[in-house]
Length: 475
Ligand code: NDP
Image (cartoon, rainbow, N blue to C red):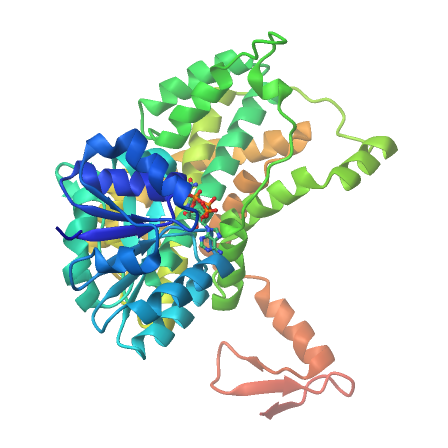
């Protein structure tokens, strides 16, 4: 008996993916650097399906049907290269190495090119949904060649999450496209979490609500247009009471947010592509600010003064819901724009609507709202920004007065809301008929003779600033 698929790397993610394949009736070859994990999997879950455990890489490869499909689920970075170096010499032309870890898309591009030269398919694949998703159905974002998807896609679709029977798995595009899209998914996740955290902070500090009250508010919001996994779990976290102290759980946790790096990667890539993903950037920087213990304690010691007291007006709770929804639309619009820009840069031909479709279940940013994103791109795949789609345009138009009030309240109360404020600034930047960028062009021309374009004539112009300031020459 041969296995249809093999998994090497059987820590929490690999183990659960292997079990998911087995539960769907596939025979799964198992391998891990240290054999004890392989043994434990078979001992604990062997009755869930058919597993072929192997102690060596050679035995593992020999137990796979051809073309071989090997999923690598190890630590990203050098361990992934080590495992590729171990397996590539054992494989034959047409076999597939599938990296399902959180690799940087540039590494995936490099690995794909190297393995292609050896006749092997390398499929960088995003997998979202954490360990629960891996076991019960993740959202899967495979890159690599179209040909590899023919042999691999049906298996991945089988174990993926489903919405109305449709799999949350689609061939994203060639080489690094899958890992790129997974990276942006995580970047959007950072932005969404930051915005939710700001909503909580405003309701607590400006609204005077307790964590338990805010949990109720979020549970209510979860029934409406904000309905999403992240809102749902936020309510659960806020409800939690620490059994030792009897205090709200959120009050006993150190307020320094950590990060593993996919948010930072998203922003780094956006800087290279020149796409303003300010929502994701603010979220990454807000985590960095929270983690800057030395700077924060210096500020605390110096007693940086806050604003003089002013009353909070209006229906804060309703306003914050509007601000959260509008800011979220901006963050997603920016993330999708980054996917479109990368797709153009690398010739990936990514269908953005398909990404919204496969994120509707099995991943951390799953939300009702993704249906509307899918519909927007179904209408126009080349939409310049989601903000001009009818649904989102109307939603933001309806929210904007409340959104502005919330940003004013945050500023007046001295409550940091970088996500809400920068999203609003981005929106106003897009709306502006004239931007002060014209003045920046003037400054650049003044000190660096960088030239500028005119609104009324073709060509590049430079003004001789030091002399009479009027003379123009075409560059
Ligand atoms: P870890 O990232 O903790 O990696 C542990 C696994 O990597 C073990 O199987 C370990 O083998 C193996 N490994 C480490 N170094 C080497 C090496 N040099 N050679 C061979 N094998 C090595 O496991 P996770 O299951 O948490 O994650 C796996 C991948 O999935 C990562 O890339 C992660 O970023 C990604 N991911 C994780 C998610 C999560 O929620 N945890 C969600 C989505 C993706 P050994 O047992 O011998 O030490």
